[in-house]
Amino acid sequence: MIRKIIKIDKKKCNGCGICADACHEGAIGMVEGKAELLRDDYCDGLGDCLPACPAGAISFEEREAAAYDEAAVKERMAAKKAAAAPRPAESQLSQWPVQIKLAPVNAPYFDNAKLLIAADCTAYAYAAFHSDFIAGRITLVGCPKLDAVDYSEKLTAIITNNNIKDVTVVRMEVPCCGGIEQAVKTALQNSGKMIPWQVVTISIGGQILA
Image (cartoon, one colour):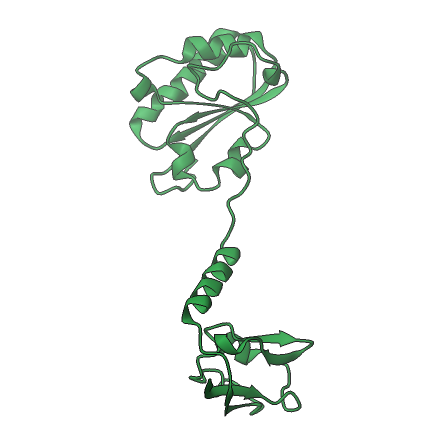
């Protein structure tokens, strides 16, 4: 079909790439440092790229060209957007199970382990939970309010029967999370071991408070 479509003068093109950015359909690309119309059916002929060109290298012409394929353009741009979207980080979890109630008392992964004991909600509230807390640690999670159980006996057994290097407790700022912190304190005391430990508190807004 004969229709209006853009024309790029490569002699005038200075390779700035502004036109490629201005083309919402992705019809223009940079090839060997020069702007180029990649496909006729991606050009809608509206010329959003014309005023963007500082070198005056783009103009309109009427010629035989494939019809503008709006569906193909939308599919291409959706794929481009998906490819540019941030990809989720890889899981840093190194063992299973993670629930305190289900965890074994003895397991090879506890040997010389840095132990993370976390309230269930913390992984949802704190976006970088895997990279900042799980990485390099053996992870145990629980919610004393929902489980309606005192974890101290199970944690005492784990700490007593294994060579734990240190313990990190991650809890939410809400009062019910005090149960998991207290359970760890009790377990450490009952084990009779002097193990370095720390408590990190996460706000309901996902920020580290302490």
